[in-house]
Amino acid sequence: MAYHSDAEKDLKKNGAIASLSLGAERKFSFKHKTIKERVDIVLKKGSLLIMKDETQTYWLHRLPPTKKITSPRINLTFRTIDKTAL
Figure 1 (cartoon, rainbow, N blue to C red):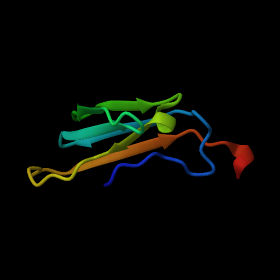
Figure 2 (figure 1 turned 45 degrees about the vertical axis):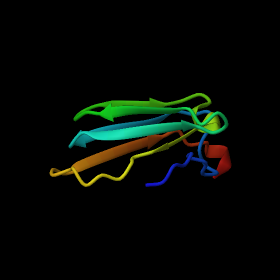
Figure 3 (figure 1 turned 30 degrees about the vertical axis):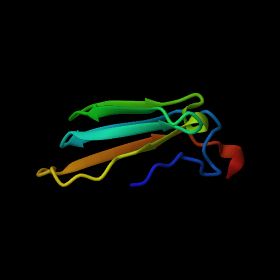
């Protein structure tokens, strides 16, 4: 998946997005929108990544493609929805 920020209309501004990784480890990358700083982390089996506050405002993120994965991975994502935007 390419670098992106979650910006759906019904997401709460600066709300939390939680991502639970199950299965194979994967690298997850952040890139700052203006200074282009990059931060890579490894999502291990059972890890919980929480993006909150102004993460979506200032950072892009992605799961870089790789050919080294030999076992499956499932990701469960939970988002804070703004009911007034529906």
